[in-house]
Image (cartoon, rainbow, N blue to C red):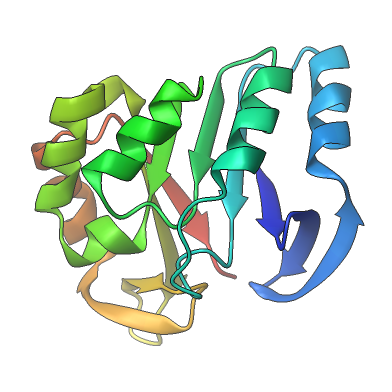
Length: 167
């Protein structure tokens, strides 16, 4: 899983202080050489800043990738998911848009197939021992806990779920 911010590859700790670690295209080339099984690229600012997915970057990454490729970041409509899929991306990762409107999973699954829909749930353990889901790079807690979300998103047709610990 590679994190992208402003078109650059970054690394964070606890979802904070992104540090530049390189160019995403060069990273893809390295992972091609290492025969990595699958690659996920997440634009960590697209949703927070209300930006559309960077289709140019996505197309460039998909063209370079020699493994199944998943992209996420800023995807909030069926049309965006279809456009990304047509660029050669096998899977589309969704988070805030479907955590706030779970039925969108079903709509996107109907358009591109449930095997191509990945839902990412960022979570943190609460003081009371439950696991709370967050959106917007871990800055906003949502009302449903992780176990409720997993069941609900599965019922709407999510093909894969990625549980991403903020801690």
